[in-house]
Length: 90
Image 1: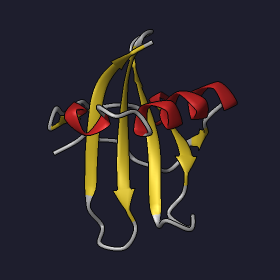
Image 2 (image 1 turned 60 degrees about the vertical axis):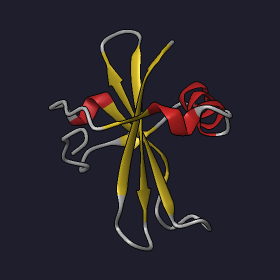
Image 3 (image 1 turned 90 degrees about the vertical axis):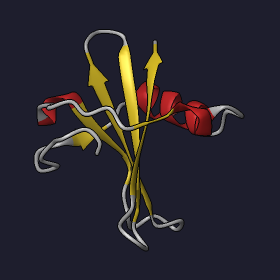
């Protein structure tokens, strides 16, 4: 499971959003934040941090659920696996 969204129409994340995502994924307890929660989100609630063409073949997406709740999905471009992490609070 994961967050449900059509990835068409998504925009690049702002510099602040990208910084937030990288701080989270580099934190020591990021793996503990794995979740299987599912939300139906609109494309305007999701932004792209890095795409699958990146050197590590991972795509990162930031899901903005409400004013302060965030989820991060990590898409493995090599095997197609998607893992959701969160919730994170601003």
